[in-house]
Every structure is written in C-alpha cells, then in structure tokens.
Length: 364
Ligand SMILES: *Cc1c(COP(=O)(O)O)cnc(C)c1O
Image 1 (cartoon, rainbow, N blue to C red):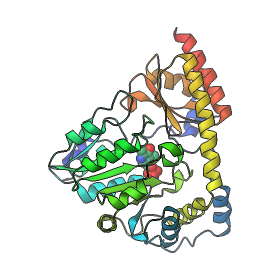
Image 2 (tube, rainbow, N blue to C red):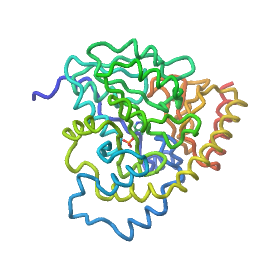
Image 3 (cartoon, rainbow, N blue to C red):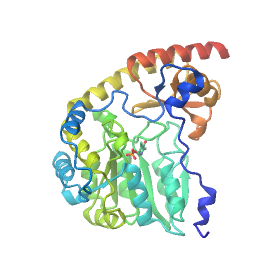
Image 4 (cartoon, rainbow, N blue to C red):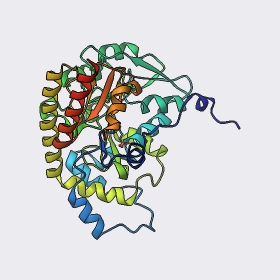
C-alpha cells in the first residue's frame, strides 16, 4: 500500500514488559517499577472518592471543550480560558503541534537524546530534526540551539526539566533564549515535571506565554498528579496559537473520566505537596548513597535520576530486574553506561541501594 515511506524507518513505541509477565518469568512475588517516572505514591484519594461517587455517564460523549477543567485551570494559573488546550496526555499535544507545524522540508530543533516523541512526530510529518549536544552540566545548550535554527525551522523543543537528564536551564538563560529566538519559530516548553521543581528554579512560563506569542508550555496530570493511566495534559499559549492547534485536535480527545479526575486532582494541592516533599527527601538520600558509591549523576529537578554506572546499563537493568526492580537502561535513551531511575518510596529505595551496592562489589 501507499503509506508514508518514513514509517518503514520508524518503530512503534517499545514498551517494557508488564509487571505480571516479569513476575512469572523470574518467579518474583513483588515488582517495584521505577522505569516510567510515575507517581510512586499513587494519586489523590479525593479523586478516587469522587469517581466512585459520581462516575461520569459513560454512554455520553465527553465535553469536547473541557469546560469544567478549563475554568478551574484558568483560575489556578491566572490565564484566559482561550489560552488553554487539552490533550490525551501532553504527548498528544506534541503530536498535534507537529501536525500543525511540520511538513516536508521543515525541521525542528531539540537537545540531543531529549524526549523521543519530539523526533518521532517530526519524522512522521515529513520533517527532519536537528539535535544539539547538551552542555557539560547536562543542561540544554541554548546558545547552540539558537545557532541551529535556520529558515526551515518551525519548532524548537525545550524540555525543562529535561527527560532523561533531569536538568534544566536557569530562568535567565531561558529568557535570553526567548528574546533571541526568531518570532516565527514556535518554542515548545515541555514542563511535564514542573511540579517537582524547587520554587527557586521555577520558570514563570505562564507569564512568558503572554509576552511571547511563539511560546507554548506543555504540562500533564501524568507525573506528579499520578493520573498517567487516564491520559490528560494541557498546553498554555497565545489564543491565536491555541485556536490553530484546536483545528488539528480531535473533537473528543480527552475522556469525561479524565477531565473530572483532573479537575478534582487540581483541588488537592496537599497531595502534590506531600508527593514533592517526599520525593525531595528520598532523592537527597539517594544522592548521598551515590556519592558514597562514587557513581556519577546529574542533580535532578524531577522524580528521576540519570546515573552513570561502572558497567553497561543493560547489565545493571538485568541484575535489578532479576531482583524485582524495573529501571530504564541508558542504552535505550542515548546514554550508554547509565541508568535512569524513578525515585521510589523510602523503603523501596533502601532495598534498591542495597542491590546497587552488591552489584558494585561484584564487578570490582
Ligand atoms: C512523561 C512525559 C511526557 C508525556 O506525558 P503524558 O503522559 O503524555 O502527559 C511529556 N514529556 C516528557 C518530557 C515526559 O517525560
């Protein structure tokens, strides 16, 4: 058949094995999944209570305008309602942006080995990708990204904090970048891990979307809010940009259950505060452990850490999976001899540290 030629050069997303499969394969009772940066503390109990009491009518199409959540978010963020767009996860917004901006001959610019969906969706729309090496501190090299922009560039992807490094640029670096970036190039600021960022590092991105019409911030309920299974995220941008993206968006792209859950989750700020406080505490303990072990890592503004390992990340992965922990080998993320670990609960991380210690002793 006559499908796009590029499809033969791409692969569908390779998801890891499901935990029940791994349990069977290795005869394990318990599996701790620290591979996808999900919220290890679950999600707001208010969401659970609300959904069990008022499950939306499932025979009825969802509100395509997402009015309830839209109003709640516009109040929370102090933005106009027409500055918001919703997606089936922020991943769908990446897809919508590519459909709206990328065509044959255009390119998008990103930091090398940042979130793979930027590249994947650019390719599907017939564009090419310019990948710019990261700086030695793991951050996006925004100067080099500016230099990579040419007349065919339609989108620049800035992941802040970045997946998989966990690093992010300073507010000043970002502002300088925005001031120098051509006004006809869309800057996508992917803030999937925004809630985990310590206050002093937060970018005031909602305000910037008002001063820079070529900026969109993408956020999600999948990570800190713990609703990855429901698939809902949103974008904040200039009303004209949002209008154009809405032309591409499917009419009922987020479910009624997801819309309701997100609205309730937004009200439970205490859950987010607990999650981020625990994450920070356990992350600090893990840094100390890594320092003692003498394994290098980037300090992270998220709920995961990219760690350099004294062996192939695939070997560490295999060792850990046999012992009940799933992490991400860096080999699959463009970082050989590394692993990306979601910060687990205190107890799980203590067990993991014990295993990593043993692994380190075995290979020396
Ligand atoms: C997880 C993640 C997303 C996508 O999250 P959704 O579940 O699609 O909302 C987007 N960007 C980055 C960098 C991520 O890590």
